[in-house]
Length: 216
Image 1 (cartoon, rainbow, N blue to C red):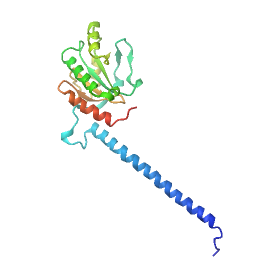
Image 2 (cartoon, one colour; image 1 turned 120 degrees about the vertical axis):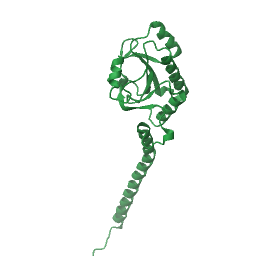
Image 3 (cartoon, rainbow, N blue to C red; image 1 turned 90 degrees about the vertical axis):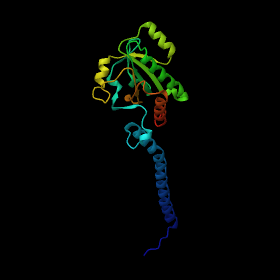
Image 4 (cartoon, rainbow, N blue to C red; image 1 turned 135 degrees about the vertical axis):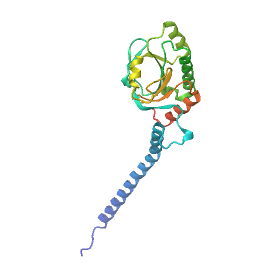
């Protein structure tokens, strides 16, 4: 058998093999670190939406809307008569407050609850937006009154029959008014609240969702 007369070549070859092993180990280590962070967040997000695996004493505070409904399927119009296309806007979490033509009484109570929740989010408040959705525009006086009380509220209209048809194949086909639909960052309404829910309940849900979702 011929004797190896090139020890330098052998050393280089051995070093390359070791480098490959180290690089491979580094890649797997990096993947493991990423997985250890991302997978628990993904699992928590799935559990929140589906309720699967969630203990009965920690269920969602709101009512899940099943199936989740794409808000792009309804026509929203702003108070200045322009189309509102949420898919073209910043990917925020949103409350669509479905109210009556005057938004008085119970509708105003729900506006107040969602406003207080929004305020209590503190430095996370910029990730959430509230929209009032009525069947027709409010009177000028009523609009001014509510705008004064709710300076960050957006005023929109949508055909109420279209909203009912939009929800017809969901488990909230007979949506009572007023109700607040929580819309995720992808534009899907996925949870429902009304005046039976306290501000603390709304706050608990939205804080958890903000925690387990990225700011886009």
